[in-house]
Image (cartoon, rainbow, N blue to C red; front, side):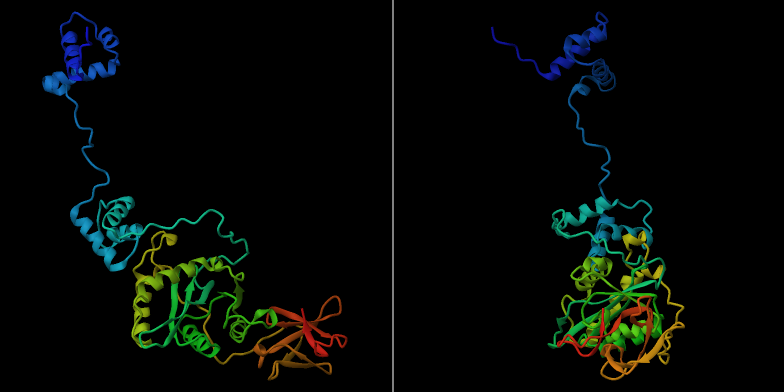
Length: 390
């Protein structure tokens, strides 16, 4: 005899009919049909409210989709994305602060909208341990104008074939872009001229952080260049990142990525038009663009010019009592106790301080930076009779 096939609907109907007959206990029927009492009472309630039709399988689709988004809001999100090119969190901040949405979609919903419309690119995952963690002690910016990051963004050719080297300066506390200057090269003279204009407008920082390339560093004493010696003479400490470790200046490098995407692609026709684009981009970056690191504040809300003003006429560098002061002559030499010592061409025109240490050695300082020791060594044929050692 073949097995009799019974559908789920028939079983539920039979269960309900038997339960409503009053001849059986619900608990016994649930045990007989192999269902829980919770399930049994659920079908009885469905039958009471909807009749036998309530015993059919119903859609489990939620009544409200938490990831749904209003069509008007979706169009606004896409419009803002095309206008600014920002990510989901920054677009959410604009919707709330600039457009006053009281019930905005969440970050994931905005991200799904951008993904659905092909406005995002899959991020390439870096394998763990691909980059060494930065462990060098660098100064943490605690207030505006405490630490400035300085660098040249990679050069590119303009539409007229002229080279453009953007000089960038940012305040590491507020992320405020102080300068984005299009220069035709990375020379000492051009860079110093640009810094003079910046110092006159924004004042002087306490520390400037740079990499080990030109024009910020050299192969001379303590790696100082003419530019960094000038900064020190103004009372600014110079901080160098590790060689080949741009992640030591990570926030500044990340700003360069945004600058490249939003202000250099495609390149402008000439230097003047490219500089105008830099100025427009800088205004948006400082006053419009929210930053996750700043709890979605704008850099302009946290930055203010420095109270340490720039004096172009003051080239004095003073030393404590016990130092002998010598001015570095053209060629980078000083004369001391009948001998001539090479200090470095970067220090020409500035005074250096010489003092005896506890071991009786003559140490050379420029401002608060120890440059080395004055040594006479006639035994080494590859060195001059008088030079500055480590």
